[in-house]
Length: 329
Ligand code: SF4
Image (tube, rainbow, N blue to C red; front, top):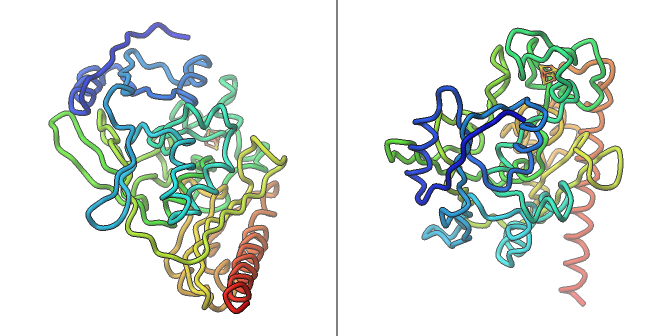
């Protein structure tokens, strides 16, 4: 691990200012550190300065005046998933979080950190391999290499990695907003749809945050009802990243919303596909996956999206029928 300096900030603006001041040659915020510390040990991330944001009092979940919830940036994944309001009104979020990582990691990992975690492409972590994300311009070992886990849509000729998280997929289906502050004290609200970038020819840049811009909270709009589901298909039953995941909110009439994880640089949602939900999983999947560019290794993900979606829709229907039977009885 490379040497670095460290400070604890007292306010969000002070943290953003400290990070911006140290941005050349490089500063990073740290809270749970569950991804960043691994990357620093491998010298994939080499910050010269760490700004600890754990004392900023961003660890509360509060109701908003609009009827939603404001989740502080350092609320842990465990706290968020177990909050009674989240479990009752945003079940897809609880289900997505508990499908990720392990209990120990969820106790440390934070809301902002979860959004900012970096890809798990194996070549990104192997510093002997070319990787445009780790070293821009060096090439991509995954293209033509082992790509079973990697992306099938929204990728580019420079990078075919995926966003690895589960929480962000649920945030996307809920239309969350990411709140930030910069070194000048300016705040910004970024729709989750615009937060993660497609790789294009700059895969080293994961998000649309500016240098030194600090996430302070994630806001959820008022509850939208419906049956909330998160289905994750993976190579082993726990502690594994999604091959494909489906976050869905489905109403009794079959309408709803869906976002897909494990296939793209960001949670993959196409609003035109939501509109096709009453027509069934095939119609939705056709719209979601139009323009997919899978490799020979991961072509199975394209039909797997449709099958996982069909399973989620069937589960929602069964739950709705069970509820009706209970009420009638
Ligand atoms: Fe690097 Fe992206 Fe290629 Fe993986 S897919 S080796 S992260 S450039």
